[in-house]
Amino acid sequence: MVSTAPAVKFGIDAFAKTRFEILPSSSSEDKAAAIRAVYRQVLGNAHIMESERLVGAESQFCNGTLSVREFVRAIAKSDFYKSRFFQSAAPYRFVELNFKHLLGRAPLSQAEVSTHICCCVERGYDAEIDSYIDSDEYQTAYGENTVPFFRGIVSQVGQKQIGYNRMFAIFRGPAESDKAVKYSKLVAAVAGNMTTAIKPPKSPAFGSAYDAPGKRFKIVVAGQRAGARRRLATTTYVVDGDNMTPQLKQIHRTSGRIVSITELV
Image (tube, rainbow, N blue to C red; front, side, top):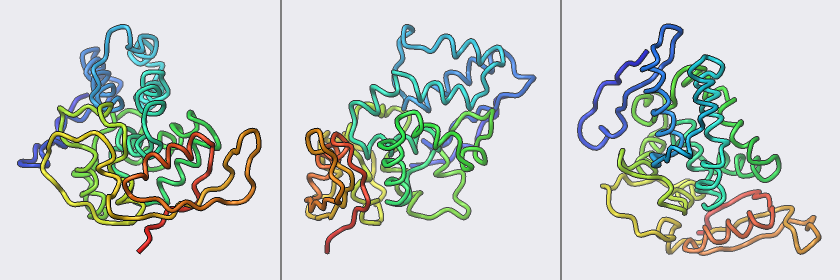
């Protein structure tokens, strides 16, 4: 079954999409449309070659062996997703996009981001993906048979304004491709618990412009590797906002666990 969400005018119309829910009575055409919607949502609007499609998972979905939720999980755990959003992006960007692709919203706090970075480092890639798809939030928002969609606009009742604003920072419309940006757009705002201004779309200057120029942050890290040994004590870094993403990459490479990130004033 396919139902269309009401269109909203002006800047937020980009969030108004067709909502797909698969029912026992859904036709093969409905399922094909849902497959396209899952690829578009989970892969951040990436162009997919025929050779890159998950043919086996698609077949299982069409014959009812896989639910929408499990099809989403298969794509998020695929080499396609992993190579574009985990192996080639900053750790904060990876987590930021997982929120966007799998929960349909932006991260709301440093605690949320830190929890997921620690999950990925300590329990592995698959556990990080499962932590979104198996969450109560996913179940409440989408259940087993609804394709994830952006909830920044349609679920504003009871939601914080900060989440609404941040959604605009990571979603700039249906023509955007998430694989084009490797750095986090929200690392400074989330780490410093700062508001995010809604800005009109523009061509991004790929680099660290979103990191937080002019600000400084203290990062406390535990359990980093030093050669073949692992440090038991915590390590503290004081980092300029311009260098947040490179520093986080270095921490990730040495398997450090981020304990906290606080803005220095």
